[in-house]
Amino acid sequence: MAAYEERETDILIVGAGGAGMFAALYADDNTPQDTDITVVVKKLAGKSGCTRMVQGGYNAVLHPEDSIDRHYEDTIKGGKFLNDQEIARELVEGAPKIIHKLENELGVFFDRDEDGHIHQKPFAGQSFDRTVHKGDLTGIEIMTKLRDELLTRDVKFLEETRAIDILTDESGTGAAGSLLLDMRKGEFTAMASRMTLLATGAGATMYNISTPALEKSADGQAMAYRRGARFQDMEMMQFHPTGLLAGDTKLTGGVIEEGIRGEGAHLYNGEDERFLREYAPETMERSCRDVVSIASYKEIMAGRGTENGGIWLDATHLGADIVEEKFPGMTERTRNVGQDLSQTQVEVSPTSHYHMGGAVIDEQCHSDIPRLFVAGEDAGGAHGANRLGGNGVVDSTVLGKCAGEAMAEEFHDHEIGDISHSQVTDIIDRVTAPLEREDGEDIYELREDLEMTMWEYVGVVREESELEEGLDLIESYKERLERVSVPGSKRYNLTWNEVMDVRNLIIAAEMVARSALFREESRGAHYRNDFPEPDDENWLANVYVQQGDDGMETSREDVRFTRIHPSELEVEPTIPNTDAVQGDD
Image (cartoon, rainbow, N blue to C red; front, top):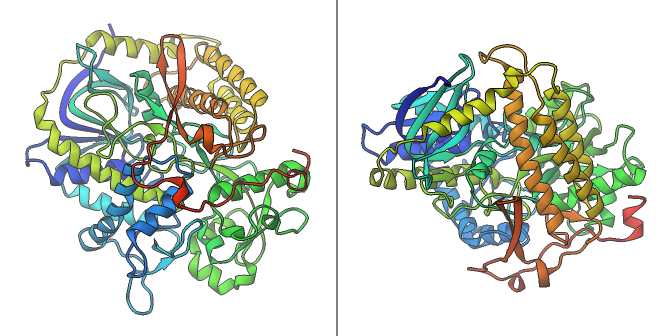
């Protein structure tokens, strides 16, 4: 019989990026002193995940000439009207309050202008310069102060511990905790809880060029899917336009933040042309991320890219002193790979960055599984078809706060349930099976194949035949996964943990591919070469995916316009579909 320890906690939070840490903060603020709050994190608390990697900044309405309505309209327009409008409103209304808490209670210090006011810089897709920042390393400032605050409180952190699966109670009707693995010791714990939050950060690393921390492997999304949760708009994977090209190194894909384009940097193809004149002549480099990424990809695939399959980002006309002063982190990053943002053009490419799709939630982060909450990038709805730069950290902090407050309010209504012991042993048997096999598939080769399949068949530009071929390959990867063998013991076995990562990524990849095949139009981050225009008549709809009796099932429902209708706003045009623009792709 599989060996495991049994433990209990009142509130279990899986993930210690911005959403998980803010949930812990607000849950602790709003519960009795003896409440047991446990945070599980695959790496180190406050020093991993993607909120710490945020460079550009945090969108918030602070200036008297700006307004909540204006920020809200920018967010809805950027999302091409697929947003859950109530969740989006929660974000923009909550953002200024979080900035106040960060500065006045946690000691976060944002950059100031000459008058001493918080400085706000321009970001693409916004009608007002509202992006608050600390140089170009905003995430480090926020997460460092947040971690310092939580370490002074009675919140338990289980570091280098991964959640394997959500556990249900004996009735099977709700979340009752999670099976955990202490990665250092190789030991399992069945952690029972009253409330469970998933905030692990999705899985943009399913692509071979990507920006996130490597520990982000769609763990939360896969766990929620296996328990029957419903997902929306999983086809909407955002590709950041300017991921650094650094050869065969882990730095390839790392973001060169878009504040540089907001400041006035230019993009050129391999023929030294500012190609965005052909795609978005009015907004050019300050267009939304989806527009710039699709245009860049088309130039590359048409043979007009750089020698290494990218495009050029040029900030030299801004002046070396200005670039180094305003973007020190980005300048250092390029110098680390033998380039120099302040002195020369830098080679970049679209890079998989952020998942707008995710588990269906409400404004308090309830999923459709009782007592299971989802926040941050594991959840969908807030950003629709495309996220504005600077709105991601708003999502993680504001919805983390909402989840923490909701769990604090509701946890006393529920007892810690009895978990299913047969369920625990079944999960342990499944995840340890590769350790019992010999001479099987190599997990690293399988991951590389998955990443290339997603890039080539389910990438920036999509079409039916390629999506179907990609899905066939994903099906074959499921079979190969069951033949993977891993040497060694359970104790700090990184190869074994890679198997669990890839298992989760394959689930998320299939959700992306099936949703992309289902949506027969182009909208936001989802571009179909065979359906190159948005189809408002048929596809102002959310695409849903859920586990069914015969596997993954897709469906659609019309968007609920609870606050604003597309007819009330002008939307930035999609990429034009002309021969002159498309070239050979």
